[in-house]
Image (tube, rainbow, N blue to C red; front, side, top):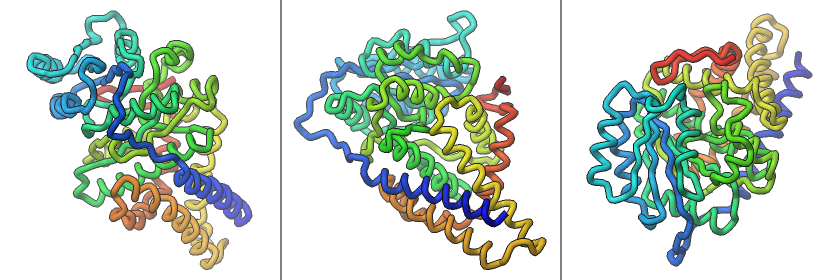
Length: 377
């Protein structure tokens, strides 16, 4: 087992250190004061039961430093059972920007986030489609930074950074650190021209390329993966037209989960799509992370059975911690959350069994999301 442990740790180290170097090389993008946007933008927000959050997001969008005549917002309501639709309607009456409310219950057999996004894309009039979620917050420069990157580099798909805010508990801060690693790996993989992940809370792509790659065709039966499967499809057709928006003004903020049940349910939803990946790069990354954590977890039993020397056991765990520390130091510094770096210590205690359990649970594809029980095929 020791050779396997060392080999898996070496593969993991190579992967994370490659991301560490790549993250540093991602060009920092910042729109100059003299930049005047000319791109028509449609912000598409799929929502379900977001009455507690949607007004704050709409206020953020109304405060965007972006020409009002080039901007429209589409709220696509996926059968909300609370006051989301009413709150959106009330905001539209006094909004200073163009906002459209679209309700999936007005269409036949339309349900789920992918259906909401698909309908939003169909009805959008903008050239560049920008996406976020109903429970997010954005800064006033958010759209301007997307438009600047699109204008200067002409990518077809742009992934943006996401971070947690209002993290007051140990559990929430551990989530922040773990989530930062995902954002960092996603951005670095784009820089390496081997994109594997992104986050639907902050991304953009052109309406033309969505149509050209067939949208969600081929994975429409999966509830999750509206962002990553599309990323993989566009990269396959246009490998040099994917970009990561590395700018702190473009960070989208959302809240960490308050309960362990909600957190696990979300992670099972994410991992449930891994078996459907067709991107070899994404498969390799997922397999590498799973195998190294599985073998490190197994090493605990080997240590207790006297099959593994204590020195080797300590050395391997310290090596993994050091590798993760280097990478997260860089990513958390960009996110303005470097002070949370030491929450890696309690996170390391639970991360290995957590990865294994969620990965296995994801194979069954059953989870709760937005008050629905979903089972992937």
